[in-house]
Image (cartoon, rainbow, N blue to C red; front, top):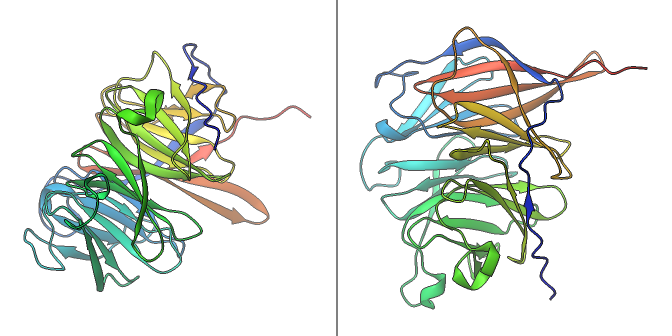
Length: 307
């Protein structure tokens, strides 16, 4: 199969007028329900629940979309309902929820009520290229293929729906698509996988066969970590060190900085998630941002378009 290895360097700074307007914040530092200790990731399920990876407290907390606490599971340990430095969560599959349990070197699978189903751990009998050490992130496509990010060896392993490894990529053999310090995975329309890489200061794009397609970068990126994809294919990027949110256009040609209308400035945004809503035949989107030990909720306001 032919590989597309074109690299796109976006060095200009564009601004299209989209604004994020804060409506609410919740959370604070602590270990009580609804409090956080270094949360690193969040995701919104298809049924409209917000899951937050409360990494420092070794737990997953579940909220409704208004930020009302529902339940949590976890605590430090090695049992099926315990974690050791969880890093990411994927809730957008039809049935299962997946937690990247980093230091326990496994991927945990749960049902919608967070009841344990199974663990995916490395198989020492496999080819070493298909073994993994530190499960940092995962993403599942519509064919139920699982992509697991191994931070230990900076590679991605693709598993089929039977949890059988099929291919790996992002290593030295990927050439210009080699990963250096990858953080998070997500899925784009058109059978593409994206990876944030804080060492490369880029978003890397591959197809589902692991072929490297393009690198999206800008001089404004410092540590692009959290990524989320809107319904129209735009990529939202949380940059922790820049303390900014960026938007990459669906055609990858432009990067803009999201205008922020906040009650106080961003400190260190780690991750974000988008929820599209239709009300009275009008479509609008809500954005959820992890910043320090708080979750910021707000509306994405599109610029007025001339008739």
